[in-house]
Length: 176
Image 1: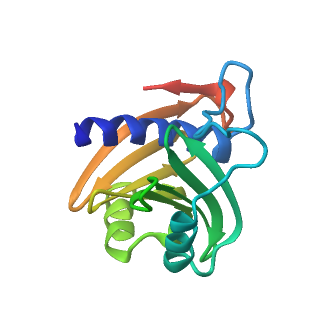
Image 2: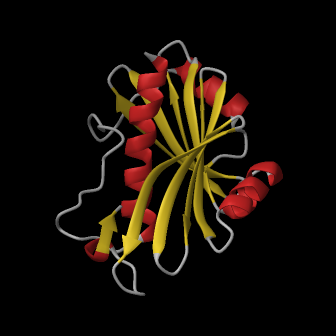
């Protein structure tokens, strides 16, 4: 079940990254909303706030949302946008850190560059869930966009798009 959740979550994450970070918006594509905000003044339990402050003391611009019975914090820390989901007992369910090539571990960056020699790494996301770390790496060259899922020593190309011309936008991507 966890593998299926991670696969689906990774797919949603990749879609969100492509839509919001890499391209201009087109009417056929919609940004996925990661959370539903209930009311304008969301009450976050003290135990959740205490645990959040303990784990993320340097967090800036924290915004809270509620996802089902859980609490999603979106914030900026360590030069990265972050999202963490905590349950009502203040247990960390997952953390996603959005960054650039410089945030990738050296061994993963070298492995990606070894396979995708002429590509530039445009964005990365680090997903931490259930004692697992999964990297989503978006890379591109002049004609192609690829999205990779990296867990441990396993690399998987999850999406690949051909650019129809040198100026890339969602409107001119063709899935390969």
